[in-house]
Amino acid sequence: MAETSCGLRALRSEVIDLAAAVHRGRVVKRTCDGAILEVHSAVDPVRCAVERQVSISDD
Image 1 (cartoon, rainbow, N blue to C red):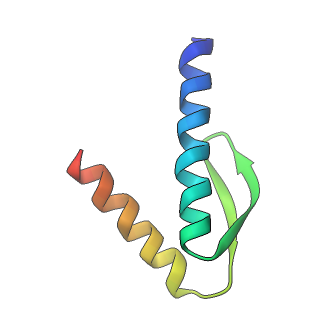
Image 2 (cartoon, rainbow, N blue to C red):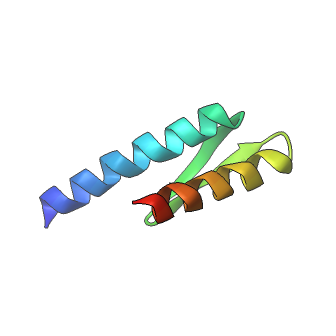
Image 3 (spheres, rainbow, N blue to C red):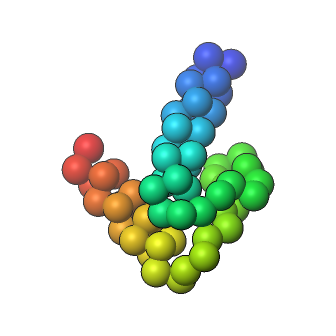
């Protein structure tokens, strides 16, 4: 179980950190199942969310 948790934590960090960088934001807080990001535009998080959904549906 600990291995799964570590793997998910690493994957989440990679995905969230990359998304924040690409969409001009920064991670303010990490939670169990996500994160709170600060962004400068309302458009950037919408684009980020759409990209995440598309990438999930492609898998």
